[in-house]
Amino acid sequence: MHINSNDTIAAISTPPGVGGIGIIRLSGKKALKIGDKIFRSKSGKKISKAPGFTVHYGHIVEKNNKSKSMKLKVLDEALFTVMRAPRTYTREDVLEINCHGGIVPSRRVLELVIDNGARLAAPGEFTQRAFLNGRIDLLQAEASLNIINAKTEAALKPAVYQLEGRLSAIINKMRDELIEFIAPLEAAIDFPDESMTCAPGVRLSKTLRKIAKALKGFIEGADKGIMLQNGISIVLAGAANVGKSSIMNALVEYERVIVTNISGTTRDVVQELININGIPVRIADTAGIMDSSCVITKESVARSLAFSQKADLVLFVLDSTREINKTDLDVAKKLKNKKVVIVVNKSDLKSKINYSEILKIFPGASRVKISALRKQGMAQLEHKIVSQFFKGEIVKSEELTISNLRQKKSLEECYGFINNAILLIKNKGFEECLIFEIRQALNSLGSLVGEDINEDILDNIFNRFCIGK
Image (cartoon, rainbow, N blue to C red):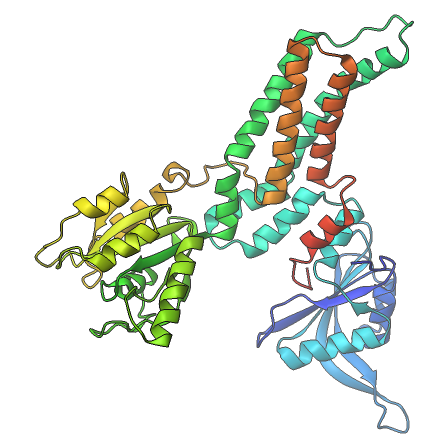
Protein backbone atom coordinates (compact mmCIF):
# COMPACT_ATOMS: atom_id res chain seq x y z
CA MET A 1 0.00 0.00 0.00
CA HIS A 2 2.96 2.32 0.72
CA ILE A 3 0.89 4.27 3.24
CA ASN A 4 2.03 6.51 6.07
CA SER A 5 1.33 4.79 9.39
CA ASN A 6 1.78 8.10 11.24
CA ASP A 7 -1.34 9.57 9.64
CA THR A 8 -4.65 9.69 11.44
CA ILE A 9 -7.07 7.63 9.38
CA ALA A 10 -10.86 7.68 9.16
CA ALA A 11 -13.58 5.64 7.48
CA ILE A 12 -17.26 4.77 7.68
CA SER A 13 -17.43 1.41 9.48
CA THR A 14 -21.12 0.68 8.94
CA PRO A 15 -22.58 -0.69 5.68
CA PRO A 16 -23.83 1.84 3.12
CA GLY A 17 -27.53 2.55 2.98
CA VAL A 18 -30.31 3.73 5.28
CA GLY A 19 -29.97 2.77 8.93
CA GLY A 20 -30.52 3.99 12.46
CA ILE A 21 -26.82 4.60 13.18
CA GLY A 22 -23.77 5.38 11.11
CA ILE A 23 -20.33 4.88 12.65
CA ILE A 24 -17.26 6.83 11.57
CA ARG A 25 -14.02 5.49 13.05
CA LEU A 26 -10.79 7.46 13.52
CA SER A 27 -7.41 6.07 14.58
CA GLY A 28 -4.13 7.90 15.13
CA LYS A 29 -2.37 10.63 17.11
CA LYS A 30 -4.74 13.39 15.95
CA ALA A 31 -8.00 11.46 16.44
CA LEU A 32 -9.02 13.13 19.70
CA LYS A 33 -7.84 16.60 18.62
CA ILE A 34 -9.98 16.29 15.51
CA GLY A 35 -12.85 15.39 17.86
CA ASP A 36 -12.30 18.68 19.69
CA LYS A 37 -12.67 20.61 16.44
CA ILE A 38 -15.97 19.08 15.34
CA PHE A 39 -17.77 18.15 18.58
CA ARG A 40 -19.56 20.21 21.18
CA SER A 41 -20.59 18.09 24.14
CA LYS A 42 -23.51 18.96 26.40
CA SER A 43 -21.10 18.94 29.34
CA GLY A 44 -18.77 21.41 27.63
CA LYS A 45 -15.78 19.10 28.08
CA LYS A 46 -13.28 18.53 25.30
CA ILE A 47 -12.94 15.06 23.81
CA SER A 48 -9.13 15.23 24.11
CA LYS A 49 -9.48 15.59 27.90
CA ALA A 50 -11.90 12.69 28.30
CA PRO A 51 -10.74 9.42 29.87
CA GLY A 52 -10.65 6.27 27.79
CA PHE A 53 -13.71 4.07 27.32
CA THR A 54 -16.19 6.87 27.88
CA VAL A 55 -19.14 7.96 25.73
CA HIS A 56 -20.12 11.60 25.27
CA TYR A 57 -23.35 13.11 23.97
CA GLY A 58 -23.47 16.32 21.96
CA HIS A 59 -23.51 17.79 18.45
CA ILE A 60 -21.25 17.63 15.43
CA VAL A 61 -20.52 21.17 14.23
CA GLU A 62 -18.78 22.87 11.35
CA LYS A 63 -17.93 26.44 10.46
CA ASN A 64 -20.72 28.19 8.59
CA ASN A 65 -18.85 29.89 5.75
CA LYS A 66 -22.03 31.65 4.62
CA SER A 67 -22.28 33.51 7.90
CA LYS A 68 -20.26 36.72 8.33
CA SER A 69 -19.77 35.93 12.01
CA MET A 70 -18.45 32.44 11.12
CA LYS A 71 -20.83 30.88 13.62
CA LEU A 72 -20.77 27.12 14.03
CA LYS A 73 -23.47 25.18 12.22
CA VAL A 74 -24.88 22.00 13.78
CA LEU A 75 -24.45 19.10 11.41
CA ASP A 76 -25.86 16.24 13.47
CA GLU A 77 -26.61 14.93 16.94
CA ALA A 78 -24.10 12.27 17.96
CA LEU A 79 -22.34 10.10 20.52
CA PHE A 80 -18.53 10.17 20.63
CA THR A 81 -16.74 7.14 22.11
CA VAL A 82 -13.18 7.73 23.31
CA MET A 83 -10.65 4.88 23.42
CA ARG A 84 -7.08 5.63 24.38
CA ALA A 85 -3.92 3.84 23.32
CA PRO A 86 -2.73 1.18 23.84
CA ARG A 87 -6.00 -0.49 24.91
CA THR A 88 -7.68 -0.18 21.52
CA TYR A 89 -8.16 -2.22 18.37
CA THR A 90 -5.20 -0.54 16.63
CA ARG A 91 -3.21 0.27 19.82
CA GLU A 92 -3.58 3.92 18.82
CA ASP A 93 -6.01 6.56 20.06
CA VAL A 94 -9.39 5.67 18.56
CA LEU A 95 -12.50 7.82 18.29
CA GLU A 96 -15.82 6.39 17.11
CA ILE A 97 -18.60 8.76 16.08
CA ASN A 98 -22.15 7.45 16.23
CA CYS A 99 -24.28 9.74 14.09
CA HIS A 100 -27.55 9.17 12.26
CA GLY A 101 -27.40 6.47 9.64
CA GLY A 102 -27.92 6.99 5.96
CA ILE A 103 -25.67 7.73 3.03
CA VAL A 104 -25.68 11.54 3.32
CA PRO A 105 -25.21 12.02 7.11
CA SER A 106 -22.36 9.49 7.40
CA ARG A 107 -20.59 10.79 4.30
CA ARG A 108 -20.92 14.40 5.43
CA VAL A 109 -19.38 13.62 8.83
CA LEU A 110 -16.55 11.70 7.17
CA GLU A 111 -15.83 14.67 4.89
CA LEU A 112 -15.76 16.97 7.93
CA VAL A 113 -13.31 14.67 9.72
CA ILE A 114 -11.01 14.60 6.68
CA ASP A 115 -11.23 18.40 6.32
CA ASN A 116 -9.93 18.67 9.88
CA GLY A 117 -6.79 16.58 9.49
CA ALA A 118 -7.56 12.91 8.92
CA ARG A 119 -7.19 10.98 5.69
CA LEU A 120 -9.39 8.25 4.26
CA ALA A 121 -8.26 4.81 5.42
CA ALA A 122 -7.13 2.24 2.89
CA PRO A 123 -8.99 -1.12 2.79
CA GLY A 124 -8.20 -3.07 5.94
CA GLU A 125 -5.89 -0.37 7.30
CA PHE A 126 -7.35 -0.44 10.82
CA THR A 127 -6.67 -4.18 11.06
CA GLN A 128 -3.29 -3.73 9.38
CA ARG A 129 -2.33 -1.27 12.11
CA ALA A 130 -3.49 -3.73 14.76
CA PHE A 131 -1.16 -6.29 13.16
CA LEU A 132 1.80 -3.93 12.69
CA ASN A 133 1.44 -2.64 16.25
CA GLY A 134 1.56 -6.18 17.63
CA ARG A 135 -1.96 -6.49 18.99
CA ILE A 136 -2.77 -9.44 16.73
CA ASP A 137 -0.78 -11.70 14.42
CA LEU A 138 -1.54 -12.38 10.76
CA LEU A 139 -3.63 -15.47 11.49
CA GLN A 140 -5.86 -13.40 13.76
CA ALA A 141 -6.05 -10.59 11.21
CA GLU A 142 -7.28 -13.03 8.56
CA ALA A 143 -9.71 -14.49 11.09
CA SER A 144 -11.36 -11.09 11.58
CA LEU A 145 -12.05 -10.96 7.84
CA ASN A 146 -13.43 -14.52 7.95
CA ILE A 147 -15.81 -13.55 10.75
CA ILE A 148 -17.13 -10.64 8.68
CA ASN A 149 -17.54 -12.83 5.60
CA ALA A 150 -18.88 -15.94 7.39
CA LYS A 151 -22.00 -17.16 5.63
CA THR A 152 -22.99 -19.92 8.09
CA GLU A 153 -22.57 -20.83 11.75
CA ALA A 154 -20.19 -23.62 10.71
CA ALA A 155 -17.93 -21.06 9.01
CA LEU A 156 -18.15 -18.62 11.93
CA LYS A 157 -17.02 -20.98 14.72
CA PRO A 158 -13.49 -21.78 13.47
CA ALA A 159 -12.96 -18.12 12.54
CA VAL A 160 -13.78 -17.06 16.11
CA TYR A 161 -11.41 -19.71 17.51
CA GLN A 162 -8.66 -18.45 15.21
CA LEU A 163 -9.29 -14.83 16.25
CA GLU A 164 -8.95 -15.89 19.89
CA GLY A 165 -5.43 -17.04 19.07
CA ARG A 166 -5.93 -20.79 19.46
CA LEU A 167 -4.27 -21.66 16.16
CA SER A 168 -1.51 -19.11 16.77
CA ALA A 169 -0.77 -20.72 20.14
CA ILE A 170 -0.28 -24.11 18.49
CA ILE A 171 1.97 -22.67 15.78
CA ASN A 172 4.05 -20.73 18.32
CA LYS A 173 4.46 -23.85 20.47
CA MET A 174 5.83 -25.69 17.42
CA ARG A 175 8.28 -22.84 16.86
CA ASP A 176 9.43 -22.91 20.49
CA GLU A 177 10.03 -26.66 20.31
CA LEU A 178 12.11 -26.31 17.14
CA ILE A 179 14.13 -23.41 18.55
CA GLU A 180 14.85 -25.47 21.68
CA PHE A 181 16.61 -28.06 19.55
CA ILE A 182 18.28 -25.86 16.98
CA ALA A 183 20.11 -23.65 19.50
CA PRO A 184 22.44 -26.38 20.89
CA LEU A 185 22.98 -27.82 17.39
CA GLU A 186 24.19 -24.46 16.10
CA ALA A 187 26.32 -23.90 19.21
CA ALA A 188 28.03 -27.27 18.76
CA ILE A 189 29.02 -26.32 15.21
CA ASP A 190 30.14 -22.79 16.15
CA PHE A 191 32.21 -24.03 19.12
CA PRO A 192 33.43 -27.54 18.21
CA ASP A 193 36.14 -27.56 20.89
CA GLU A 194 33.71 -26.82 23.70
CA SER A 195 32.06 -29.66 25.58
CA MET A 196 28.40 -29.03 24.76
CA THR A 197 25.43 -31.34 25.04
CA CYS A 198 23.49 -31.55 21.80
CA ALA A 199 19.89 -32.65 21.56
CA PRO A 200 19.74 -36.46 21.32
CA GLY A 201 18.72 -37.65 17.87
CA VAL A 202 15.94 -39.89 19.24
CA ARG A 203 14.38 -37.07 21.26
CA LEU A 204 14.61 -34.60 18.37
CA SER A 205 13.17 -37.12 15.93
CA LYS A 206 10.23 -37.77 18.28
CA THR A 207 9.49 -34.03 18.50
CA LEU A 208 9.73 -33.62 14.73
CA ARG A 209 7.37 -36.53 14.14
CA LYS A 210 4.86 -35.04 16.59
CA ILE A 211 5.01 -31.70 14.79
CA ALA A 212 4.73 -33.40 11.39
CA LYS A 213 1.61 -35.27 12.54
CA ALA A 214 -0.04 -32.04 13.71
CA LEU A 215 0.88 -30.27 10.46
CA LYS A 216 -0.52 -33.14 8.40
CA GLY A 217 -3.82 -32.92 10.28
CA PHE A 218 -4.14 -29.21 9.52
CA ILE A 219 -3.22 -29.73 5.86
CA GLU A 220 -5.73 -32.56 5.41
CA GLY A 221 -8.49 -30.39 6.90
CA ALA A 222 -7.51 -27.27 4.96
CA ASP A 223 -9.86 -27.86 2.04
CA LYS A 224 -12.75 -28.14 4.48
CA GLY A 225 -11.89 -24.83 6.11
CA ILE A 226 -11.38 -23.09 2.78
CA MET A 227 -14.70 -24.38 1.45
CA LEU A 228 -16.51 -23.27 4.60
CA GLN A 229 -15.22 -19.74 4.06
CA ASN A 230 -15.55 -19.49 0.29
CA GLY A 231 -18.60 -21.71 -0.18
CA ILE A 232 -19.05 -24.72 -2.42
CA SER A 233 -19.78 -24.05 -6.06
CA ILE A 234 -22.58 -26.22 -7.46
CA VAL A 235 -24.05 -26.15 -10.97
CA LEU A 236 -27.31 -27.65 -12.22
CA ALA A 237 -26.55 -29.04 -15.67
CA GLY A 238 -28.37 -31.17 -18.19
CA ALA A 239 -30.45 -31.14 -21.33
CA ALA A 240 -33.21 -28.60 -21.87
CA ASN A 241 -36.53 -28.99 -20.03
CA VAL A 242 -35.45 -31.65 -17.51
CA GLY A 243 -36.44 -29.45 -14.54
CA LYS A 244 -33.22 -27.70 -13.54
CA SER A 245 -34.97 -24.41 -12.79
CA SER A 246 -37.62 -26.15 -10.70
CA ILE A 247 -34.86 -27.81 -8.66
CA MET A 248 -33.17 -24.43 -8.23
CA ASN A 249 -36.40 -22.90 -6.91
CA ALA A 250 -36.93 -25.84 -4.56
CA LEU A 251 -33.41 -25.52 -3.12
CA VAL A 252 -33.56 -21.73 -2.60
CA GLU A 253 -37.17 -22.08 -1.37
CA TYR A 254 -38.69 -19.34 -3.51
CA GLU A 255 -39.46 -18.74 -7.18
CA ARG A 256 -36.01 -17.48 -8.14
CA VAL A 257 -36.10 -18.71 -11.75
CA ILE A 258 -38.88 -18.54 -14.33
CA VAL A 259 -40.32 -22.00 -15.00
CA THR A 260 -42.43 -22.79 -18.10
CA ASN A 261 -43.19 -25.75 -20.32
CA ILE A 262 -41.29 -24.05 -23.13
CA SER A 263 -37.88 -25.59 -23.76
CA GLY A 264 -34.95 -23.22 -23.23
CA THR A 265 -36.64 -20.75 -20.86
CA THR A 266 -33.38 -20.18 -18.96
CA ARG A 267 -30.91 -18.32 -21.18
CA ASP A 268 -28.26 -17.12 -18.73
CA VAL A 269 -26.62 -18.39 -15.54
CA VAL A 270 -28.67 -17.63 -12.41
CA GLN A 271 -26.81 -17.87 -9.07
CA GLU A 272 -27.86 -17.87 -5.41
CA LEU A 273 -26.16 -18.47 -2.06
CA ILE A 274 -27.88 -21.00 0.21
CA ASN A 275 -27.10 -22.81 3.45
CA ILE A 276 -27.15 -26.60 3.34
CA ASN A 277 -26.57 -28.18 6.75
CA GLY A 278 -24.13 -25.43 7.71
CA ILE A 279 -22.24 -25.36 4.42
CA PRO A 280 -22.46 -22.20 2.31
CA VAL A 281 -23.36 -23.26 -1.21
CA ARG A 282 -23.23 -21.08 -4.31
CA ILE A 283 -25.70 -22.77 -6.62
CA ALA A 284 -26.12 -21.89 -10.29
CA ASP A 285 -28.92 -22.77 -12.67
CA THR A 286 -27.73 -22.93 -16.26
CA ALA A 287 -29.33 -23.01 -19.68
CA GLY A 288 -30.28 -26.43 -20.98
CA ILE A 289 -27.86 -28.00 -23.42
CA MET A 290 -29.32 -28.33 -26.91
CA ASP A 291 -28.34 -28.16 -30.56
CA SER A 292 -29.37 -24.88 -32.14
CA SER A 293 -28.29 -22.44 -34.83
CA CYS A 294 -29.57 -19.53 -32.71
CA VAL A 295 -26.70 -17.25 -31.65
CA ILE A 296 -28.26 -16.58 -28.22
CA THR A 297 -28.81 -20.28 -27.54
CA LYS A 298 -25.24 -21.11 -28.57
CA GLU A 299 -23.89 -18.51 -26.13
CA SER A 300 -26.19 -19.82 -23.38
CA VAL A 301 -24.91 -23.36 -23.90
CA ALA A 302 -21.29 -22.19 -23.92
CA ARG A 303 -21.81 -20.40 -20.59
CA SER A 304 -23.49 -23.46 -19.11
CA LEU A 305 -20.54 -25.68 -20.01
CA ALA A 306 -18.01 -23.12 -18.77
CA PHE A 307 -19.72 -22.83 -15.36
CA SER A 308 -19.99 -26.61 -15.10
CA GLN A 309 -16.25 -27.02 -15.66
CA LYS A 310 -15.41 -24.55 -12.88
CA ALA A 311 -17.87 -25.95 -10.32
CA ASP A 312 -16.88 -28.04 -7.28
CA LEU A 313 -19.90 -30.27 -7.90
CA VAL A 314 -22.30 -30.78 -10.81
CA LEU A 315 -25.89 -31.89 -10.30
CA PHE A 316 -26.51 -33.72 -13.57
CA VAL A 317 -30.29 -33.63 -14.04
CA LEU A 318 -32.29 -36.26 -15.94
CA ASP A 319 -36.02 -36.50 -16.72
CA SER A 320 -37.36 -39.85 -15.46
CA THR A 321 -40.42 -39.67 -17.77
CA ARG A 322 -38.37 -40.18 -20.93
CA GLU A 323 -35.59 -42.40 -22.16
CA ILE A 324 -31.98 -41.27 -22.22
CA ASN A 325 -31.27 -39.51 -25.52
CA LYS A 326 -28.21 -38.35 -27.43
CA THR A 327 -28.22 -34.89 -25.80
CA ASP A 328 -28.15 -36.44 -22.31
CA LEU A 329 -25.18 -38.59 -23.29
CA ASP A 330 -23.36 -35.69 -24.95
CA VAL A 331 -23.74 -33.54 -21.83
CA ALA A 332 -22.63 -36.43 -19.60
CA LYS A 333 -19.49 -36.98 -21.67
CA LYS A 334 -18.55 -33.32 -21.30
CA LEU A 335 -18.83 -33.71 -17.50
CA LYS A 336 -17.19 -37.12 -17.08
CA ASN A 337 -14.13 -35.70 -15.28
CA LYS A 338 -16.21 -33.71 -12.78
CA LYS A 339 -17.56 -34.66 -9.38
CA VAL A 340 -21.19 -35.46 -10.22
CA VAL A 341 -24.43 -36.33 -8.45
CA ILE A 342 -27.07 -37.76 -10.82
CA VAL A 343 -30.43 -36.15 -10.03
CA VAL A 344 -33.43 -37.95 -11.49
CA ASN A 345 -36.31 -35.48 -11.57
CA LYS A 346 -40.10 -36.01 -11.96
CA SER A 347 -39.98 -39.19 -9.87
CA ASP A 348 -43.67 -38.72 -9.01
CA LEU A 349 -44.53 -39.71 -12.60
CA LYS A 350 -44.18 -43.05 -14.39
CA SER A 351 -40.51 -43.76 -15.09
CA LYS A 352 -39.18 -44.69 -18.52
CA ILE A 353 -35.50 -44.10 -17.83
CA ASN A 354 -32.68 -46.62 -18.20
CA TYR A 355 -29.46 -45.58 -16.42
CA SER A 356 -27.06 -48.10 -17.93
CA GLU A 357 -25.47 -45.75 -20.51
CA ILE A 358 -25.18 -42.87 -18.04
CA LEU A 359 -23.60 -45.09 -15.36
CA LYS A 360 -20.92 -46.12 -17.83
CA ILE A 361 -19.89 -42.48 -18.05
CA PHE A 362 -20.25 -41.84 -14.30
CA PRO A 363 -19.28 -45.12 -12.63
CA GLY A 364 -19.83 -44.92 -8.90
CA ALA A 365 -21.65 -41.58 -9.02
CA SER A 366 -24.29 -40.93 -6.35
CA ARG A 367 -27.87 -40.95 -7.57
CA VAL A 368 -31.00 -39.46 -6.05
CA LYS A 369 -34.63 -39.42 -7.17
CA ILE A 370 -36.68 -36.28 -6.58
CA SER A 371 -39.80 -34.41 -7.63
CA ALA A 372 -38.92 -30.73 -7.68
CA LEU A 373 -42.55 -29.81 -8.43
CA ARG A 374 -43.87 -31.60 -5.33
CA LYS A 375 -40.74 -30.87 -3.21
CA GLN A 376 -40.17 -34.61 -2.73
CA GLY A 377 -36.69 -35.97 -2.10
CA MET A 378 -35.10 -32.54 -1.52
CA ALA A 379 -33.75 -33.50 1.92
CA GLN A 380 -32.10 -36.56 0.35
CA LEU A 381 -30.62 -34.36 -2.38
CA GLU A 382 -29.15 -31.98 0.20
CA HIS A 383 -27.70 -34.96 2.09
CA LYS A 384 -26.10 -36.23 -1.13
CA ILE A 385 -24.56 -32.81 -1.75
CA VAL A 386 -23.02 -32.61 1.73
CA SER A 387 -21.74 -36.20 1.55
CA GLN A 388 -19.60 -35.33 -1.48
CA PHE A 389 -17.33 -33.13 0.65
CA PHE A 390 -15.08 -34.01 3.61
CA LYS A 391 -16.96 -37.26 4.25
CA GLY A 392 -20.16 -35.38 5.00
CA GLU A 393 -18.77 -33.96 8.25
CA ILE A 394 -19.15 -30.31 9.11
CA VAL A 395 -16.68 -28.64 11.47
CA LYS A 396 -16.73 -30.36 14.85
CA SER A 397 -17.00 -28.48 18.13
CA GLU A 398 -13.74 -26.73 19.02
CA GLU A 399 -12.17 -27.75 15.68
CA LEU A 400 -9.46 -25.47 14.28
CA THR A 401 -9.25 -25.26 10.50
CA ILE A 402 -7.09 -23.51 7.94
CA SER A 403 -9.08 -20.86 6.10
CA ASN A 404 -7.12 -19.94 2.98
CA LEU A 405 -4.52 -21.09 0.47
CA ARG A 406 -1.77 -18.90 1.94
CA GLN A 407 -2.02 -20.67 5.25
CA LYS A 408 -2.17 -24.09 3.59
CA LYS A 409 0.91 -23.39 1.47
CA SER A 410 2.96 -22.29 4.52
CA LEU A 411 1.98 -25.45 6.39
CA GLU A 412 2.82 -27.65 3.39
CA GLU A 413 6.25 -26.02 3.09
CA CYS A 414 6.90 -26.53 6.81
CA TYR A 415 5.71 -30.14 6.61
CA GLY A 416 8.20 -30.81 3.79
CA PHE A 417 11.13 -29.31 5.72
CA ILE A 418 10.22 -31.25 8.88
CA ASN A 419 10.11 -34.53 6.94
CA ASN A 420 13.50 -33.74 5.39
CA ALA A 421 14.89 -33.20 8.88
CA ILE A 422 13.44 -36.53 10.06
CA LEU A 423 15.15 -38.33 7.14
CA LEU A 424 18.46 -36.61 7.91
CA ILE A 425 18.36 -37.86 11.49
CA LYS A 426 17.41 -41.35 10.34
CA ASN A 427 20.25 -41.45 7.80
CA LYS A 428 22.71 -39.69 10.13
CA GLY A 429 23.16 -36.77 7.77
CA PHE A 430 25.26 -33.68 8.35
CA GLU A 431 24.15 -31.49 11.24
CA GLU A 432 24.55 -28.41 9.01
CA CYS A 433 21.88 -29.85 6.70
CA LEU A 434 19.64 -30.68 9.65
CA ILE A 435 19.94 -27.11 10.95
CA PHE A 436 19.11 -25.75 7.48
CA GLU A 437 15.88 -27.81 7.25
CA ILE A 438 14.76 -26.80 10.74
CA ARG A 439 15.54 -23.16 9.99
CA GLN A 440 13.43 -23.35 6.83
CA ALA A 441 10.59 -24.91 8.82
CA LEU A 442 10.83 -22.06 11.33
CA ASN A 443 10.68 -19.52 8.50
CA SER A 444 7.52 -21.15 7.14
CA LEU A 445 5.85 -21.05 10.56
CA GLY A 446 7.02 -17.45 10.99
CA SER A 447 5.42 -16.37 7.71
CA LEU A 448 2.21 -18.10 8.79
CA VAL A 449 1.80 -15.77 11.78
CA GLY A 450 3.20 -12.78 9.87
CA GLU A 451 6.89 -12.53 10.78
CA ASP A 452 9.27 -11.41 8.01
CA ILE A 453 6.46 -11.60 5.48
CA ASN A 454 6.64 -10.03 2.04
CA GLU A 455 5.00 -6.60 1.79
CA ASP A 456 3.13 -7.60 -1.38
CA ILE A 457 1.57 -10.53 0.48
CA LEU A 458 0.45 -8.20 3.26
CA ASP A 459 -1.09 -5.83 0.73
CA ASN A 460 -2.93 -8.70 -0.91
CA ILE A 461 -4.36 -9.82 2.43
CA PHE A 462 -5.52 -6.44 3.73
CA ASN A 463 -6.84 -5.22 0.36
CA ARG A 464 -9.57 -7.85 0.71
CA PHE A 465 -10.95 -6.04 3.79
CA CYS A 466 -13.58 -3.33 3.64
CA ILE A 467 -12.35 0.24 4.11
CA GLY A 468 -13.79 0.65 7.62
CA LYS A 469 -12.22 -2.49 9.11
